[in-house]
Picture (cartoon, rainbow, N blue to C red):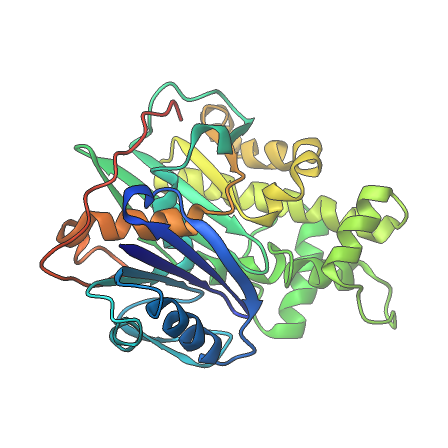
Length: 341
């Protein structure tokens, strides 16, 4: 039996396949632009249905999930869980927010994919942790461990108002607010949206359009552009401030950084003022120093999370931000690894 997993973002989609005996170890089959159309998804599902029976379909999408039928925030087309299960003739399916899928994947992420960035090494799983996904956009989810059960609470914290810690940050935030009416976390603390926005705020009036995010990060790494270097400095400081705020707000024992901000910029992150900004919390600065910061390098994390949800069957029915279509015969539960994190 075959399980199919789709990670559908604002511009791209990734397609994974796993066999019943290795659901926790999916294979990436395709990564492509969907061009704002559901047709590539339909084509993939139909082609794999012809290869043999499909036992389960998992889908993660960039945007809030409150029903089995959602419209993607930035793509504009509809993802309908029941319809897509029918297309590939899958008897069961799960649909959830993309960061929620990543956060569920943390529960079965191989230890070698988890890297300590700052703070103390964990000796046991914290009851509360927070996953922060930074890539094209920004996502946040809270992870709870209660009586041996693992539950993710998705959020739209990326659209909450951003906070700075000094006058340079405040000036950047003010200019962003003047341009857009609201300065959200995602508007500044993201690679695709945030880096050009910060760069524009630092550039002199009348400057040309900001360079692409990839050029900003490359120029900062090569130290060939002072504005790019200053942009990355502010980016990492704002990410640290936000992560510290989340740790305080949720009482979290760990923060997990997921996405390109860690996978592609690990060295820059470690050398930045991220940790200084994280711990800059006045009377609670010593408290924040006890929080562990981990970075995740796992390109299969979303698919692992979808597999974990499918394996849980009706135990996860009704979980926040998770929509499920269940058959009478589910898949065997996945064993969660015993990890010191």
